[in-house]
Length: 65
Image 1 (cartoon, one colour):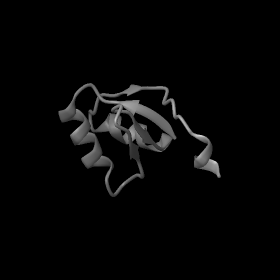
Image 2: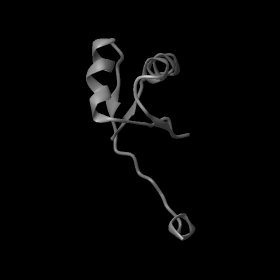
Image 3: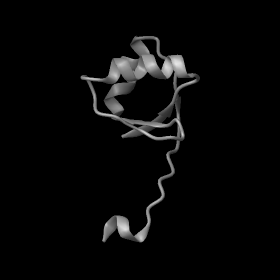
């Protein structure tokens, strides 16, 4: 899985619409989206611009029991 960011809301909306039903993904309030590696090529073929990011997750102790 790779974290990506889209340059604006419209492109993000288009990308999420494209991903839905094809690939699993997770979004965060930060704007980053976690997608499987194999989703990158299809997104590029659709002409959807994105930047590969470095998602920084924060876990608290209770997350893992």
